[in-house]
Amino acid sequence: MKKDFHETQNPAVDTEEIWNRPDITLIDVRSPLEFDEGHISGAVNIPLLDNTERKIVGILYKQYGHDKAVSRGYDILESKLSQLLQHFASVSKNHLTVVYCARGGMRSQVITSFLNDNAFNAKKLVGGYKSFRLWNINRLDNIKIEYPIILHGKTGVGKTLVLNEIENSLDLEGIAQHRGSLFGAVGKNPVSQKTFDVCLLNKLEELDLSRPVFIEGESRKIGNVMIPNNVFRQMKSGTSLLLEASIKTRVARTIDEYIIDKESYYPKIRDVIKLLERDLGNKNILNLLEQFDSGDYQSCFEYILLNYYDKKYGHSMKQLTFHETYSTENVKQTANKIQQYKI
Image (tube, rainbow, N blue to C red; front, side, top):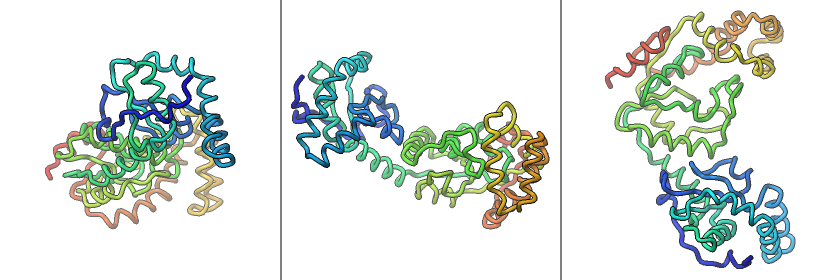
């Protein structure tokens, strides 16, 4: 095998040329851990080095320098050549393949050269994932939502249910995989900031931003991710609508969300209830846990909604001016009415 792939000059493309291009095969050659933290939409992870190998090569580079690390990298590549070719067997040699690593350096250079040496049509991404990340942030910083309409309401009124019935809507909690509350991560797989940002951009570009875009009212932080400043600023200046539902309906929707056929959620729910002790007091927490363990979910969640969530939400609602109020007892009817709202 050639051991000068890292020195071969390869054609290159920038992020703008590959964004939302279904005709391009996008290959991420970073380690699985790097890929899981964030990657370009549609990319396939075919790592040059796995997590352990990357660590080994990194240590060699720090202790013995560039040449030693490169030599070890080629040894690893040679040991998995047949495996790599199997991975690339499904990639068309007639279509463009774009390869990227962390910064557009040696890993993408080697694999791009390797592919071209095997009759593929391959280019590397200038600047790698770091360049894409900066491009992603800049794109979000400059995106314009002409008519943001923000849906507010107490926990359990069904804001997400209504959003799901509206075509031109943005479900930030769905993108974050977090409901934006203490119970928000229960049954979810919260994403990283990098993944949130790329998925948010994808969704925004799917929407018609010249028409009203319906968005659930959020604080800037959803779980561990932050809504980009530009998007959040536009939400804050948007038209606010208030959704309301009876406590009976709100409790029923909470039970449906967290309890019905979701036994695996129960241990995490108990842990979160314990976190409410500072706000609700030890005696009330013990009572709530007893209700939860006995299956009295109605009493348990009603108390939490009225005495924790409603009080927290009440403070933020005082700062808002609502242009219209809608009952969400019938979600589909409410969604139809909201879509007819005139700016």
